[in-house]
Image (cartoon, rainbow, N blue to C red; front, top):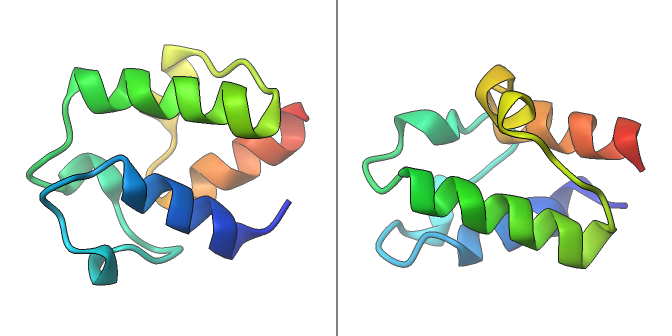
Length: 76
C-alpha cells in the first residue's frame, strides 16, 4: 500500500477540487467540497481498493490524508 496512490484515490472522489490540493498533509475535512456523501465515497473506495472496512469514527478521527492512510494501513 502506497501513500501516493492513496492520495490519488482520494483526489478522484472530489470532482470540483483540483488534484494539486491533495498531499499527505491535506486536511480533507477542511476542503469546501467535503460532505457526508464524500465520506461515504471514501468508505466505499477503501473497501474496494484496500479491502478494509472503515467506520465513521475512523474518518472523523483522521485530520490529514496521511492520518487516514495510516488508519487504513493499520486495519489491513
